[in-house]
Image (cartoon, each protein chain N blue to C red):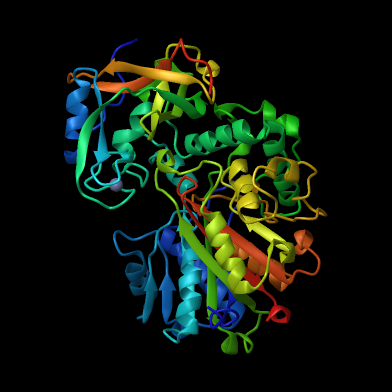
Length: 141
Length: 397
Ligand SMILES: [Zn+2]
């Protein structure tokens, strides 16, 4: 993977535990203490049932590509040398959908139904950005 | 809701566009010009106006700042911002306000000049970069989407197209047909930006920016302005133009970021359309002309399904015979749409203007015969917020 020239996300107050965990390439997700569902993106309340008691839990971060679009033009200059690249929505096994980029194969080969697993890209401040790569062992869903 | 159906009408409509996509003058010049033209066409003057709606221009309070500039002191105001569907939302609010007696003459106005701004070296329109300062840059998008390099808004619509193709077998050729049919309408509109006919192969051969969407699946970026004037049904009958009565309205939104959209193949149009049709007491089969937001071809396909013109998943086959074009059984985007007429960023105003003209029989060579019911369906954000307006002639009351 090339240098960390990618746009580096800010850290919002509520998401600090998420970003701290990425320093050890760990994924943590909020879960609702009332309805038990996972919550994405980080919030101060559960969007499923409205309760405020959310707790952070470890997550594997494997999932299935729900939709994918290959970008043939870089959305910002730091990505110019990576074109074309695949932006995807992935349904994690934990029950949430998130945006990601699927790397580790040709962008055009990324497809709906493909099993993927986390791939961490270093950011300049020690955090990592959660990407995904093909999960070699797993058949399509 | 029965008290709103038919209680208000669009009595004047105007828009400003140019073949090369650029308009001279400041935003205020353009706003004043289309407001005057819309009021003139109705036989009304600024001092008749007691309600104003706008969501662009100015610094912080668009409707308040514009009213001051115009020299009016309205008793009803709206600056609701739902992206491209904002003007359908304004109309929904205005019709209810007029029906409830809160005001009597409302102006809804819009002007934006992204093409001129870009040519002068200004920020690229909706570039989706972290630095544009535009409305797509607010957190949490900056934290959870922008780092992945998605081009916005096109990348979001491309993801929806990707999912629709995977789930229902929709093809690039079927999406391309929407652009082809829309261009056929544009060729009948002397004011449209792009008037040369295109083929499905032309669309497929145009550069791909965000798969599976090609350049010709995407709307224009032009300058433009538009205004509509609403008043009560009673007053409308004494004005110059045939009124376009507001028969039904509905609004809904399902998410802001594309990664939070519950199902990328189903928009809030399912709710906004159902509400509008229920209020109007009509169904898709009663619509003589449909003005659907066409920021991208997939936007149209999803709207057709969600409004009930065809079942979910069958939009591709539905459009494939060219029925959206001139002479077709489902005439849609008769101005040439955002794909070929004009698109300053929020096309919803032009949907209302064209739907009104079709009701008035004022659409020239592109006039659909015997229009009694016209539908305008705005889509804002990234398939986020929809608002549906159904207009009808006197005969539909
Ligand atoms: Zn909950």
